[in-house]
Image (tube, rainbow, N blue to C red; front, side):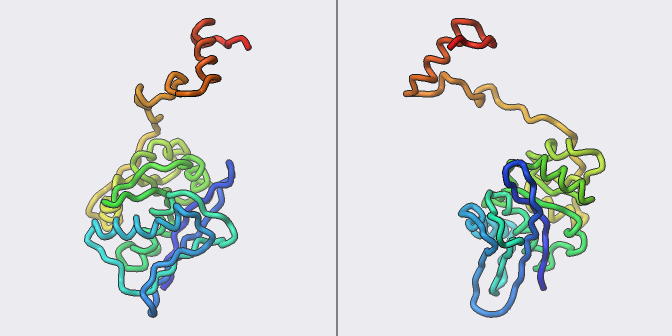
Length: 218
């Protein structure tokens, strides 16, 4: 059996559809990711394995092949963790195959199964809406995905267990409301934090001299 989950790759501002295919077969036990993955994607094997272990699920002692199609497109980023995990859960019979094909998924997995926010959720959501698909993304990105439109079915779980329970009907995840992520005051970038760069220090002094918000003379 081959399970398929839709996700996306990014080339600049362009969103490319990616088909995550997972097959389990007999032979030497292995977990291989093919389809031109970069280092972050290749390392998803360990994050996915650890996340499933945290849920009490062990990968079968089989040959597992993950293909990211089309194979000639470079796959970059940690957002492939979630679709790979969902395809594995589908081929293992934990998640319903037909239902999962209705969604595009992206998100990074922590070792305990939590879902970590990733970049590019809004363009992925707009792309999913155009193809009449839903979107599965981390809870921290749900508000961003909701901006794509009311017609988009957005599922934004905090962790992998919540997502499994949602599809099994034991837990209901409501659609998130559109919101803008509020950055902490201490997390904002400031030129005063740049050390050892004379140009940045000079620019900050000139900006203070002419007043905040006004262009500094060259």
